Every structure is written in C-alpha cells, then in structure tokens.
Length: 142
Image (cartoon, rainbow, N blue to C red; front, side, top):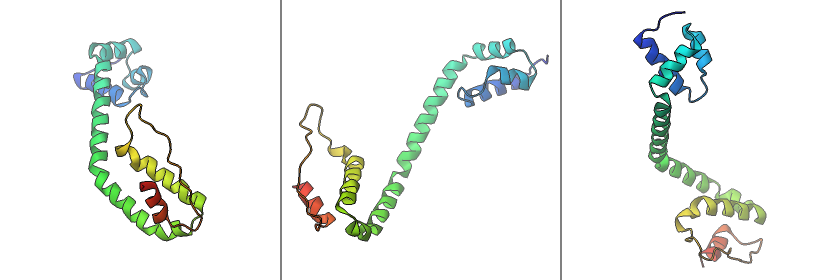
C-alpha cells in the first residue's frame, strides 16, 4: 500500500465531496492504492460530512442565483412564444384554450395567491366555443 501525500489526501476529500454520495470509499481506496480504513480515517478526520453539507448549500445558492439572473431572459422568451402562439390559440379548441389558461394561471398566478384559510373556490364562468382568448381572460378578470 502506498503512503499518501498531503496533496493526495486533499484530492481524496475533494473527489468524495464533489461526488455527492456517488463516489465510494472503496473506489477511492482502489484508485489511490491504499486500504479502505486509510480512506475512512482521512474522510473522518476532515469532517467530510460538514464539507458535503456546505458544498450542497453553496451549490444550491449558486443555482438559485443563476436562475434569478436568467429570469428576465426566460420571461422575454416566454413573451415571444406567447406572441407567436396567438394564431394557434385562436384556432385551438375550447378544451385546449382552457388547458393553456389553466397552465398559465398556475405558473403566473402565484403572486396573487390567496392567503391560507381564504376562500379558494374556483371561479365558474360560462364560455362559448366562439369566444376569443381575450374575451375569456376578460371574464376571468371580472
């Protein structure tokens, strides 16, 4: 069995933490030609669990920041798609229009969501198959 350098120990820890539970101690022992107990001691001594938790939190924060940065771009793309889809929506069946309306209200309705305990009964409207999307939306806004 080989004696590990300080750099190798750090690499083992980094690989284990970056592996997010998908890198086994056994595979690290084989890769670095050391015993399983040596790997276990390195990982225990360095409190890898805490490092894993910290790394996951950092990754989560980083992803949320990225998504927040991309929000304007995503909103612009959605606006373009919706503008391009107007003709398709006009030609769609009532069932498809209502399905699209339901999806849009679920996705974009969050900011006006009622508080807990409030009356959340759905609004019932009567729709004619000849009505446009704008007419249906106006009825929902009333």
